[in-house]
Length: 282
View 1: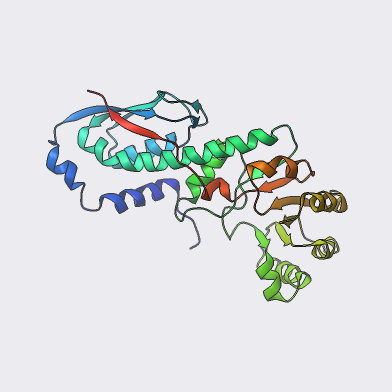
View 2: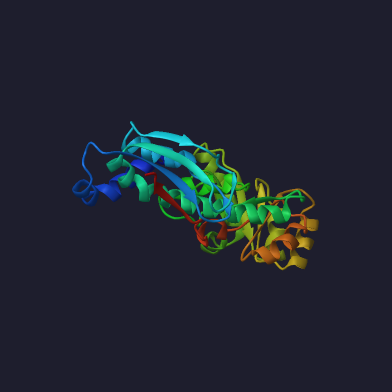
C-alpha cells in the first residue's frame, strides 16, 4: 500500500464491520420516525480523548445527527461529567453507540495512562514516546490519544523512519553492515529518512559512534547505571532513547540519566479503558 487509510476511512470500515446489512435489533424494535437525545456520561477519573472521532462516527453514520460537545479532548474528567450531547434519529443513535464508546473508552484510557507517566517526568528535558505496539487498524487513533495525553509519537509505521533493531543486525551480519546497507539503500532509492539503531551493550554503542549517518541510538534494556554512562559516552553526538520494560516505578530514574527520549510500548498495549456510557435522555 502506498498510502495509509485516513481516520475517516478507518471509521467507515469500523461501521461496515459492525453494521453490515443492518442493526437488526434496533430496526426491529424502534420505529423509523422515532427521535431521541443522549449524553455521554463519564464514570471514571481520567483524561478525555476521542471526541473528534465520536463526532466522525455519528456524522458518517447519519449526518443529520446534531453533536454538541461540552468538553474538549485532553480535559481532566471525573464521574458524573457529561462529555457531549447528541440528538437525532433514535435508530442512528443506538446503532452508533457501541462504536463511539469503543473508540472513546480506549482512547481515553491511553490518554489517561500517558498523562500519568508524563506527569512523573514533566520537569525534565525528555520526551515520552509511544511505539508500534498498537492494535491493528487502530494505530492512528491510539497514537492520537498518546498526544492528547501529553506524550509524543515515535515513527508511525515501517515507512517513515529507519529503525535498525537486533534482528536486523543479526541477519545483516553486523551492526556496521546493517547501517552501511541502509545508507546505500536510502541513497539508491532517493529517500530522506532518519536512522535509529538499537544497541544491546557498550560494544555496539561504541560501534555506532564510529559510523556516520545515524541520528539516534536506542539503549535497549540498559541498567540505570549503564544508561547514565552511555549518555555520557554519547556526549550529545546522537539523540538517545531508552527502551525496554519501562514502568511507572522506573520511569523517573531513567529520565534522570539524561536520555532525550523514552519509548514505552505499554502506553498503547497495556491499557485499562476509561469507563463511560451513552445515556438516553427521557
